[in-house]
Image (cartoon, rainbow, N blue to C red; front, side, top):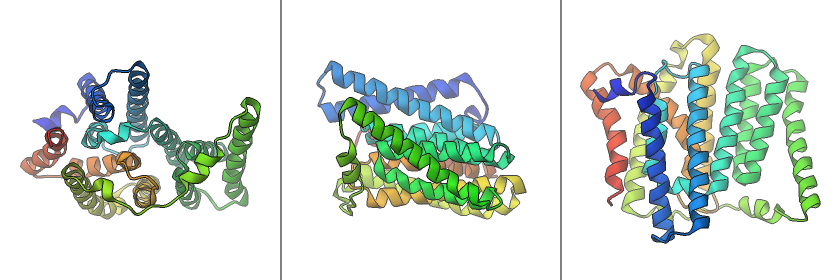
Length: 307
């Protein structure tokens, strides 16, 4: 059945996800460009596709390396189909880059559970989060995830609290130096990026309403079981599960306050939600319900392409 196809490491999983994300990029391109073929736009679409698929590969590495799932590959399939559900997430190349950098930081944060090279990992996580904030300013909110990681993984040493600030300062010194060297300013766009908007009129369409209902209802239902099962996980793995939950909450906050509601801001939710829903699918005992639950998440994005 469909769940057994994606339950193990097979080349078909990566081939399918490759073409699903490629399809999302092509759909977004034709919606945005109104079927006009322009070399610059095609290059932009290609870069967005490469960055989007690279994010999926990072997610796969994080989940396998840190045992965030039961060695299944549902999370990368869900991630790819979430992108297809909202192809607008491939529109903004800088936002896609911000998501990639946040996944880099998430990888370093969760790897803190080994209790090795803690200071280096905290610096790396803070560094990548700050770089992400340069690409999409409200990504700076994920620095709170680093605070949660210090509380969950470390002994509260004062130097551990100072390291993220050093990472932030390091990035801004490098960035400011580059701006002076090449004579350009990116500061205005960063400052503008911290504006807040509660105008959700862009979501007032059948595609968005159905897609958001599907994403949030399945995500909320899976989250209830995910939180419930945290205490049943190994003690060493529990902080990682809490980090995933906090990632969803912060990404939801970014969605609420984002200055421009285009649908692209949903991208930050896909990785943690894919992990949470994948974990729920793995523990469903009723075979028929498991198949329907998973199939709905795969079929719905394809059906919504025609709305």
